[in-house]
Length: 395
Image (cartoon, rainbow, N blue to C red; front, side):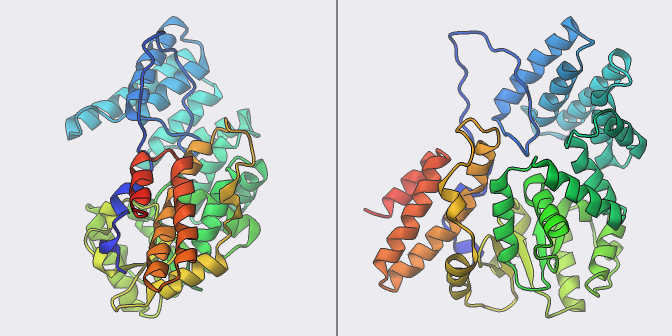
C-alpha cells in the first residue's frame, strides 16, 4: 500500500502532540528547559517558561542557568500568530537575550555556547565561540552535537569521527533512540540513501555509523543541512559516485528542493534506492507521496509499484530489534522517556499495516499480536486518539 493510503499518517507522525494542563492550585514556577533531544513540552509551557525565566534574569542577572533557560524557552516557543513578522520578532528577542548575556555573564560557558548555537544556522557563528565553550566544560556532551554538525558540513571527516565517538562514549543519547535509529538503518537496502529530519534521527545514526561501524554504507542526508549547505550535499553524493550541481534546482521551497534532488539522483544513479525516515514531516512528501512505500521505519521511493508488504513483513519479523520496546531500562522519570515514547509511535504505523495485511490473508493470531503491540505503544505514549483508533479495529 502506498503512502497516501495510510490511515494513521495524520495521527502518528506529529511527534510533539501533547496535552497541556496548568495547575491552578499553585502559581507556576520556572523549570529547567531541556534540549529537544531530551524532552519536549507543549507550546504553552515554553511560552510560560520564557516569561518566568525573563523575570528571573531581571532578579538575578548573574545567573548563567537562568539565561540559558530563558533562551531555550524563547527558542522553543512558537508565536501565537505564525506570521513572518512574528517569527522575525522572536528571532530579535533571542538576539536581545544573547546581548544581555554578553553584558551580564561574559566569558561563561553558557554565553559562548548559546551564541554559537544561535548563529550557526545563519552561518554567522564563529567556531572559536564553540571551542571556548568546550574548553570551559570539555566533559559537557552538549558541545559535541554542535561540533559534529560543524565538522559534517565542513567535510572534516577525522574530527567528525572523533566527536561521534566522544558523543557515543558520553552516553548522552538515550539507548532507545539508538535502537530506533539502528532499526531505521536496518530498514534500508545496501548502499542506499536515507533522508532524515532533525536531532533525534540524525545524531544517533551518525554515531552508530562512525563509532560502531553500523551500516556505514547508507548515505544519510539531513534535509535541513543539505538544503542549507549545497557544497556539503555535493561532497556527500560524490562519495556514492553521484555527481550533481545542487545549484541546478531551487532551495527556497523544501518540497520542490527534495523533489528536484531525488529526480537528479535517480537520473545520475537509477539503481540507487532512496528512503525517507518516518520522522520527517508529512508535508515534505506532498509532491511525491504516491511514490512512497512503507517498508520498515522508512518509506522507499519508487517510480514503479513494489511489493512493499512482503518487504515490510520481512523487515519487521526478521530484521528489526524490538525487545527494547517492552521495557524502560531506567526509572519512569528518566528524562528522555517522553521523547522515546513519542518517536516509538512510528512502530505503530508499521505494526498496524502488517496486522491489516495478515488479517486479510487469514492469519488472525499473528494480526492480533501486532495490533496489540501497536496498542501497547499507544498506551505508553498516552496517545488517546491512536488508542481509540486501534481499539475500534476490534469491534
